[in-house]
Image 1: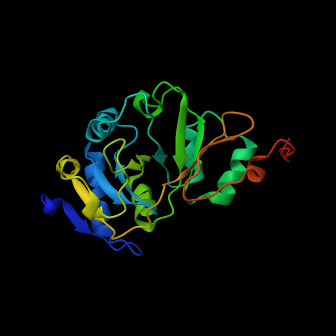
Image 2 (image 1 turned 90 degrees about the vertical axis):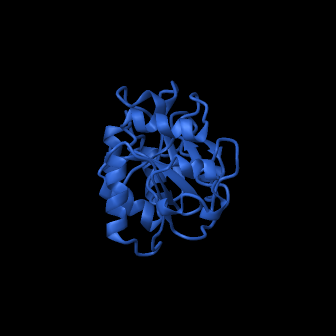
Length: 220
C-alpha cells in the first residue's frame, strides 16, 4: 500500500500513549487523522478549526450541505456545543453513551458553520472504542467523527479497504485492525417532538424507548 509510512498499528484495547500524543499534535496543527471507532474508521480533526474541517469536506468530496458529527469525551462537553439538553435526551445519553448512538441537538450560534451546514443542529456522541475515546480525551477538544470514505461510498472497517486517494490526503492513520463493520452509529434527532430516528445503525432503538411523551422531568 502506498503512503504506508502514514499508517501506524495501534493496540485497540490498550492504545499506546505515544501514538495518541502524536495524533493529538497533528490535530492541534490543523492536521487530519484516520482512527478506529467501534464499527468503522473515522476521519478526525479539531471540530472548532474551520480550516481543518474544510479539509475533511474536500477529502471526502462531501456536499457542504451535509453536516458532520462530533465526538466528545464527556457529557459536560455538550455545554460548548449545544443550546439545550432536553430531559429525554439525558435518558438516551445515560442508556447509550459511551456507544454508537449519535444524538442531534440544537447547536449553539458560535458553532462552525461547516459542522451544522445551515441546519442549526449538531450531531454528537461519546465513542466507546478505546482508541477513539482516549484520543478525544487527550486532544482536549471535540473532534470530527465522520466515516473514512469518499462520500457515497461504503464505510471502511479495515485499513486495507481505504482508498489510496484518501490516504494521500491524510497525515496519520491509526490502524486498529479489523473492526466490527456494519451501518455505523444510530442517529436520533432530539430537536423534534416526538424524537425521530434518522438512521438505525449498529444500535437498534425501538419506538418504545423514544416514547417519552408521558415522562416528566423530576427536577421540575
